[in-house]
Image (cartoon, rainbow, N blue to C red; front, side, top):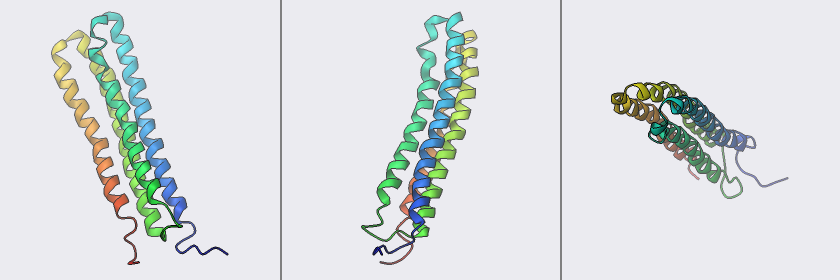
Length: 164
């Protein structure tokens, strides 16, 4: 018998939260990169001089994966049942943290991909649209930032379930 104090299944939920944060954020980053990349490639045929200027949506989509990585590291470092008890409350806090960040990253990636694809194509035809496209991309990126902030707040709640 081990001397583990806490809930035996709680780390499962914590690690699931870490995985969800990384996987969903990277799915959003991959979709945003692919969809925007198709637009950049299509636009590059007509206006090759605008390719470097139109790479902005691809970079913004790539940042989404970093948000998931940050939360996954925060969660995984908070799971150490041998050092201190890890209860179901802690596991659920980490799961909700990972889901908040991951799903926000997925939705932001979808928005960045769609706006990036249409935006770079439209920018090739009308250069005055560039600033408007960037503003829309910033608002889409903010969705993932909200998920990161909420994820950090939720993961900080882990360990507060009982006074030890």
